[in-house]
Length: 337
Image (cartoon, rainbow, N blue to C red; front, side, top):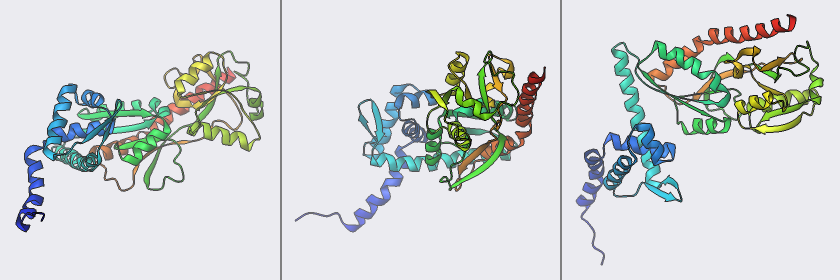
């Protein structure tokens, strides 16, 4: 006959676990654990938290011992959370998020804006986001800033996982319904060519003329690619795609190398302007007018810092729009000079 613990003992075991965790698990251990799961790597977690890898491993062992169950499993060189790890990760995000909000609210009571802002942006926005963050940092120097730059699909995956505070993307897909969307800056798409291209300097080039050119395009799934192909389709144009490249910088270098022309965001020329080795073509139907959007999960309660940055970015639109207008004016002036 199988022996059983008295009912009182069972109740005591159930009530002991939270107290046991409080006594034996530390916030630092939870922070280390959260970083490993989010980044998928002990090494990257150690780098982010400025710890040595042995220290990270020791903290996870202590946390695992406190729970009495393993938190990770290793498959080859990759590390994955166990079932218990997934449960703990959800709790960690809630605990650390609440503490972060508390810290920022306390700082706000002292007339300060402190805390951390995690911003994830698509690759094209890497030419826009640092400028906004720089302006923000000058106003709120105590805020710790984190910028994640990735392709469109990965940023949407981070949005779905609620990995960051805010996200900057271009096109918001129709199926993305459970998000709050804040349009905040223009994102014109223009046709670019090498400075010595025969079409440089010509005015009002018919869009059909582009069918004779070789194109350099982003990978399938890119918002810029989809917008360009939709425009071409409306005009019965089948572009000759010579190369598909995974970054805007790679496309710009290919344009400079004379491999073809490209449609990219005007923001990609923010550092060199329209008078560098890459010029703009004055093509009918261009620029394609698009908008930058800041998004976050609709049910997400923004931290004080995140809300402050959101308001700041929307207010900063006038400065961004003025820069874009100046670049387009310089281009139009170059056509008449």
